[in-house]
Length: 481
Image (cartoon, rainbow, N blue to C red):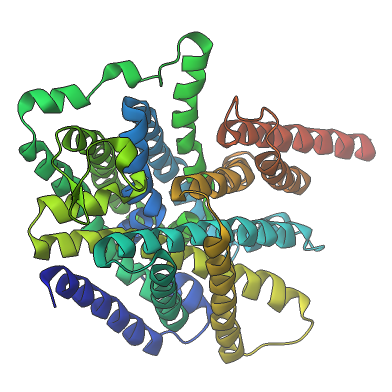
């Protein structure tokens, strides 16, 4: 067994042991969904960052930077800004609202805050989460197939099976506690990968070659005028999604004390800045390495970007070429960690909303804690199978699938949640309209590909929440008169 395999095996055994241990202390649905709200600021911060940045950061963004160059700088700025705003604007008031309205999920929070006896907001929100998260989890399974293919020569299909089985297993066993503690390990590995690997590439290239890969002519993707502005806004729009991702909101809801948000926030910032710039520089420096014939795949020198089998395989190829085998094994585990830390979180949120917000509410029967826990684990398996099937049948890149799901969740939940937390005059009808419009205009983009749905759907959803709430307030006042 070589050093890469040994490092990867140790990582997997560690993750599975965490799953077994946390299964013993997961006793009810609150433990399964939010870890009993007893996790401290360090674990929560690493869990939020690790689950927030999936295969797209460690595979998709380097691959995009390899192809598009400095254009991806706008994506980096957008994401870092979105992380900062989410922790500043959403985290603290959401944790306070979670306690005030006794909510385990965002759909339940909306229902309890607005006293929605019909349950329609909770149902619609739950269905939206389940729909988009199935695509998101599928992207992680697809990424697992790519990494295991590059590293061990396993077919992408078999790699997807291995990744799916591991992720579903430990999520099913330990719930939020397993997810949060494994996220701590995964977050450390991810930041190590994203900082050390581009430095290794930098050392491999000479100074002049490093300067050459930073080609400012690609900053707007070769576009000028309004087209250049649209290209920049498209990258920046990634930041909007951070305020509406249910798996990230679950971290804010799960922290032991709202006052610890400030500590978590600082840790999250210190993680995000080097991680995003590191991911971009893996792509940029990878281009320089390829142009100088310094990378090979399966014993064949890669002579051009076009000859690379898949740009999203750049990270594991660089790790295998530039690092000692044992360290490459750890960092390639970082790619798997990125997928697992997101897929497990999304599986968990999807499972919880189906169990708590749909089954428990609409089944018409009383469930014991043990039965609810069993249902949570059962639905984890069902959603995992659905996501695996989608990953198997889809030809989309990881970056594309994540962009779709990220934009849809951000546009659906971001405006509704932020305005719920900060605007006194918001109405439940406005929240419902915003959820529906954010979803609809992501699936059917109003501006096609000219303006990314990540932006257009978000703006439309925001306007709809405000206008419908104001209209409802006006009609209520007229009725009282």
